[in-house]
Image (cartoon, rainbow, N blue to C red; front, side, top):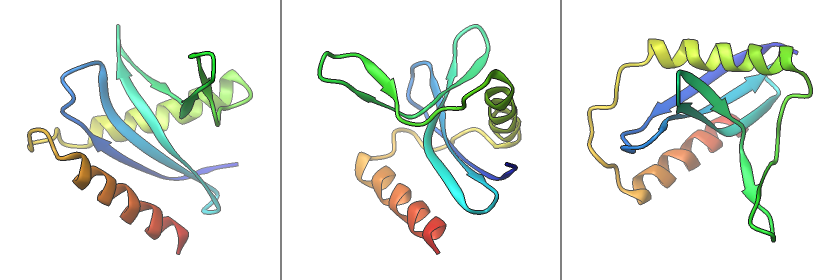
Length: 108
């Protein structure tokens, strides 16, 4: 399985989260909402949901360290190529609209 596209949106969140990425595999399968986090360097956090007992559980994740490293390297490379966000605090509505547009493009 090859990574065929990485889309990244840097955010001015004022906290550890620096960007949100979507990764496409083989031009056939996409994983959205992969977060780029800065804490002693950059790393990725896979999309997750909160369980009934309050813990977070990944909804999609690589099975082995090699694949995780491959995904992380592709996202961080894209992060380093992408200019910093100039807009301060986009509205939540604007962010949802962009996410929907991205989702619609991927579905085509």
